[in-house]
Amino acid sequence: DAGITQSPRHKVTETGTPVTLRCHQTENHRYMYWYRQDPGHGLRLIHYSYGVKDTDKGEVSDGYSVSRSKTEDFLLTLESATSSQTSVYFCAISDLDSNTEAFFGQGTRLTVV
Amino acid sequence: AQKITQTQPGMFVQEKEAVTLDCTYDTSDPSYGLFWYKQPSSGEMIFLIYQGSYDQQNATEGRYSLNFQKARKSANLVISASQLGDSAMYFCAMRGSYGGSQGNLIFGKGTKLSVKP
Image 1 (tube, rainbow over the protein chains, first blue to last red):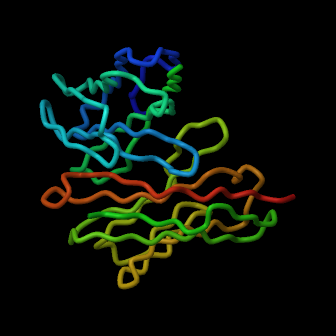
Image 2 (tube, one colour; image 1 turned 30 degrees about the vertical axis):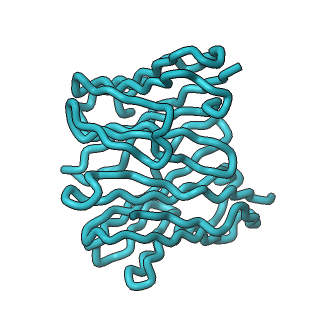
């Protein structure tokens, strides 16, 4: 199995609080992605990174920020959590050079109350 | 902009029969990759099959094959001899190239497949 872990796996937080989700990889892959999964919407890309300090917005980036200070870690921050950000969040990693599949973390279930 | 379309929200198939899940895509990148993932009720994302835009032959992996029609921009997944364990959500995805979309990886909305005994 690819070495990718997400933390925490479950979190309940209050509206208005900041929340940070962590994605850690041991594969030294260049690309890292954050998605949210909601019923009827599939997986929607929030942000992705193509190298240390290199990030770009995805389809649903409003209200989210990311940081990648090391190859192995990609952090997703909800600056001020809202109920609409209740979702399952997935991190994925990919190595474009080898043109292989993207590997996914186990997901983080976030509930904003 | 890249786009993936899966037009079948849900499908049923009889056990042991074949089923085709549809996927169409749109991209301006000359080089791209197409993927299919399975998500069972337990939630994990399982990679099934990959097709590169320059691959001459359709990809196959065991009971899975990808019917790639580049001119029609379609990448349908064919599952042969369906099994009860194939019941899951199936997602089609596309990744751009270096010079195009910086490796952007986007997904369709998915198709829920139910296999009937």
